[in-house]
Amino acid sequence: MDRTDAAARYENLALPDTSQEAWRFTDLSGFDPDSFGRNGQVGGHSPDTSMLDIELAGVAVVSEDGIDVERAPDGITFEPLADHERLGTLVGADDKFTAHNAAGWQHGLLVHVPKDIVLEQPLYVRIANTTEDGALFWRLLIIAEEGARFSLIEEYASSAPDLHGYTNAAVELFVEQGAKLEYVSLQNLSRETWHFATHHARVERDAELDWVAGGFGSKKGKTRIQNDLAGQGATSRVTGAYFADGSQHLDYDTFQEHIAPNTTSDFAFKGALRDTATTVWRGMIRVEREAQKTNAYQENRNLLLSRDAHADSIPGLEILANDVRCTHGATLGQVDREQLFYLMARGLSRAEAERLIVRGFFQDVLDRIELEPVREALADALEARIPSA
Image (cartoon, rainbow, N blue to C red; front, side, top):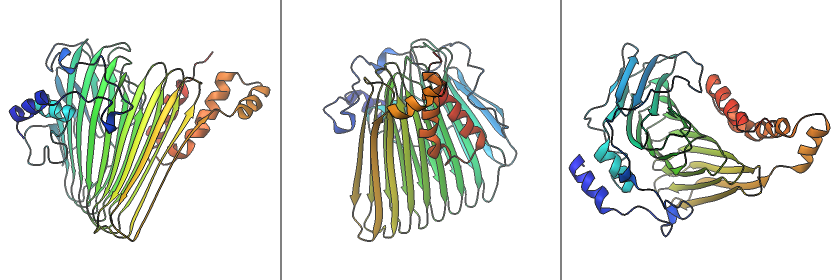
């Protein structure tokens, strides 16, 4: 779909509302995407700080002003995205927000790693909104050719903690036969930025996708994550960790699509909430008729640190094959008062005790993360959300 068609589709589609099942718990009242300025406006300075301290093979920085590839490793494509034959084949213009992205994006990144290339250090891209009342449309296309192995980290940030903005991201990941991609997406936008993102991966025969999603910032929006297990022996693992406080609202919509036989998917999301924050996780496992011997798992666990916080979890299964193993789980719980009392009786402040409880709650999902600097950064970010006094 070209930009003109996408723009027409965007104009014709109404903003989603709570009468739609996928948006039942995410009310967009008060949000007008057309009220935000487009890409190309002169913004402020991109934030210099990152959640990560890690040696990198390639670095790119994106803002409303454009994309700057600061360095790229030899032998791979790590460059601004233009037209490409695979662009839009996984994330098209099917809804209001993907149509808006397809019509309006200007700054994107193409990452193409050739056959059997192994990168020892990760690639990194920082997407930073810097313009007050601005809109930033972001597009990422990753192709891991047969046998390639590498990691890519994308980090969403804002130039100020109270910056009003609108970000819209579309990410397409192609993991070819026998390749392994570790994809890390960290969202740490300002508390006044609306964030909508659609991430879609296709994993081919005997390929492996290891995905980490961290959610800490933004005001409200929705993040969609879909993995298509398209080749026999394909494996995907998605690990999500999020923390919402104040009046934040985080919404994750995950979809595990098993197309080929003997495929495996493992989705584990954990979240902590305090104050009046709310979260939504909606997960679906779908197994097609030909996808026998599927092994799929999904779970969502939430820890409430205040009485007024609220989390909704909606797991789902749609199984058309008859020889599969599919399981799911969802739990919601308050901080254990006995644990809190035990720790505070031994001299810890309430904040210190809550930090230990939060760390223990998230430890099993943190242990799933292969990149140690990413694991440490997420742990630090989670613990830092507990007030010190």
